[in-house]
Length: 412
Image (cartoon, rainbow, N blue to C red; front, side, top):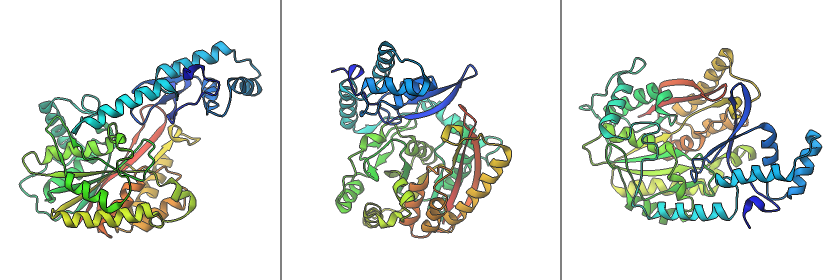
């Protein structure tokens, strides 16, 4: 049966946030997993209806609850029209979406290399234009100039870099990647990225190479295979999440720009949510899925015989109306946020993964630190590195009064 006509319709796991359209408060719905790029904007009342479509309520249940809340009748035709809209945009569970998902996943898994998902969207899709764009980022007023690539003295061992879009995060990317270009010397770049889609497993690998407009970056397939065997858990269960995830892709673009002629390879790992650890109050290291991974990847990197460099593609706080807070950011609240972020970064700079985690856990992750898992993983794998903050910044969200913070941190 077509899900739009199912008696118990179920909305997929989606990203839902408020937006303003012509001065009216609306709700934006989109798919963070990348199965569809469709975006649907609905009224708050329609969102209430969709929130009731969780697979447990019948159509009559939805209509009755709507009437109870709003003292208005939701006609069957209105409900059907809304569900058909969601189904057409592949945002409703059911046969239509299942067929599409299988087709997209099979196509992606057959590929030898992962296409540059954000070329032409976040950055230019043509090589010369991208190179010029990145040079502009390094040469911008808030940046620190083009990196001197003749240095590469090898003293730098790792870094935290943003994964926000280049337009907003450009100066911070420029500051940290200038340091990487001048002070890093490695053959294997181990990249831990935030995964924004929902995943079943804590860590997700891929053996696919990464395409960029500046050329392909090879994935160290041998290390991925060894890690899979050593870890003993399915690192490919959620591999499709790599297809549309930007947190690793953006780092690869900068690495290809910095080292166009060097034989470098990457070990790309997406890091899932630590929300369950935050709510339970336990350390992630109490979870065998985390502790075993840390041990396994340390051993695999050592066995590779390659000089590693570690990168966490990780933003920091997400606060404001878009991210579930009741109040819009103010200059005063942004200044407080800066202080809170720097207290948290103090632990990261000292290489203390547990203190870094506890600073977030103790506040219930009120600031929505989306880089928690990759930063924690980097700190544990590097085993208490010492670092320094190269640049910290905050950027407003373009859709609603909200702010995202991020930083570049260098580890020696």
